[in-house]
Length: 77
Image 1 (cartoon, rainbow, N blue to C red):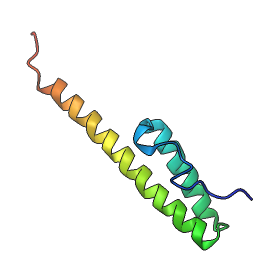
Image 2 (cartoon, rainbow, N blue to C red):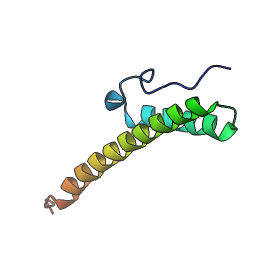
Image 3 (cartoon, one colour):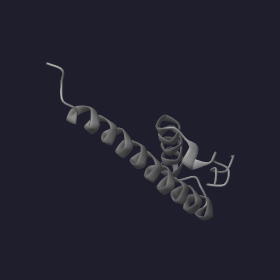
């Protein structure tokens, strides 16, 4: 069975789009939930998952800030 990708093997996490980071996170969760990974690979997958989760949160926060700016702008009406 192929091993879980380590954070080194995942494309630079800071450059992933939200969709890419979420897809990779889902893939890692599925591998972890399978229970078939050896301990070291599980730990590496968990570490990568934490980083991916933080990336998703960062991108969602930025999107929320952009929407807040739009909502705060006075309307032309």
